[in-house]
Amino acid sequence: MTRLRRFILLCALTAAMPGLPGSSAAAEGDKNNSADQLRVDSVEVLLSHVGPIVLLKVHDRAIPIFVDIIVAESIQGALMEKKPARPLTHDLMHTILEAYAGTVSQVAITLKDTVFYAALTVVIQNTARVFDSRSSDAIALAIHFKAPILVSRDLLDTAGIAIEKKPGEVKL
Image (cartoon, rainbow, N blue to C red):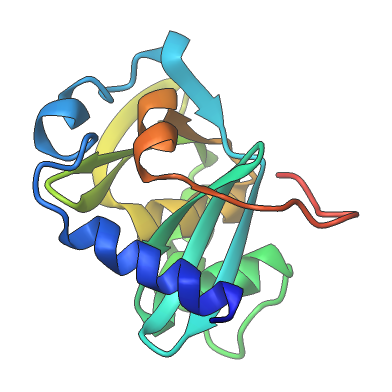
């Protein structure tokens, strides 16, 4: 079995397991406790036979998040600093926020009942506001703004999968 197939199988099994540590009850502990937050080192988009996967890499572990193809394109484009012919939603949000001197200052990812959530922090005129967001949308905007993506140690321990770092891998 190839590494990718093992990885996808493990992701599917992890998502299907009821009572997974880090789902509902454990996710309550994931609430943006800044002392417990780890910065994501890098983000990677992979294509699999079940759909695109975004990997949030921290040290020697990765948290896999399945996303739709449009968000995967937006994230990959932002990672490669390529602008699409027509702006995607994340490109539009980036442009609007910049027009009002706004920025995304950070994104915190959590997990509840097998669903990933994000707290997207936007700063405009020295006022920070936190918005509930789909994790994929928040990741795309964080990459556009080169903002840190944060996960709790508990989330990394429960949903993270061991990986090998590639030589010369780019950090955010």
